[in-house]
Image (cartoon, rainbow, N blue to C red):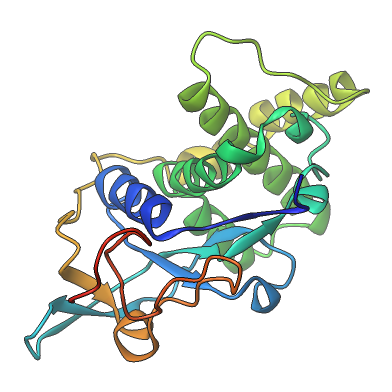
Length: 227
């Protein structure tokens, strides 16, 4: 088995549709080497989006970023010490990462982190809240992909879960401050609308192993590229 799992055009279209529908954000793909060890993240700062292909109108919106490939060995190491990520098969790893980032949007975690920075929250409290947020996003993604199945835990997870439960209680004010009050407004799932500017200018940086045309933005490798 390959050490990596790769983002393909077909998988990108699937995940981008999910992100637009459930997080109200498009996905931007980056080279894995430029992701600083991350597999995905939600960017708080707004990114430029071409409103519709062929037109010269732009909007700005924060986006979800995904790596173009994921190192499976690195992915299996869960820094929260709760979910056994090695139990997720390679073909679902990108789906898990996408749902994990969607969960961060749903829970407004970026605003929680920003608020803690503005309120000069202690480093220990930040660490606890980060761990809670990551574990919460993991559970959300797991429940979406494997509804009704018990989440597999890493050895010693009980200690981490106890800390997370304590954090949920003692940091309730921090977590409730940015609690979502209104449902997320979905973004158009038309692939020719709200296209991230980097994809328009430079194409999608598929991994070399995928062998796809960078500017064949919405086609699978089996489809003719006439975009």
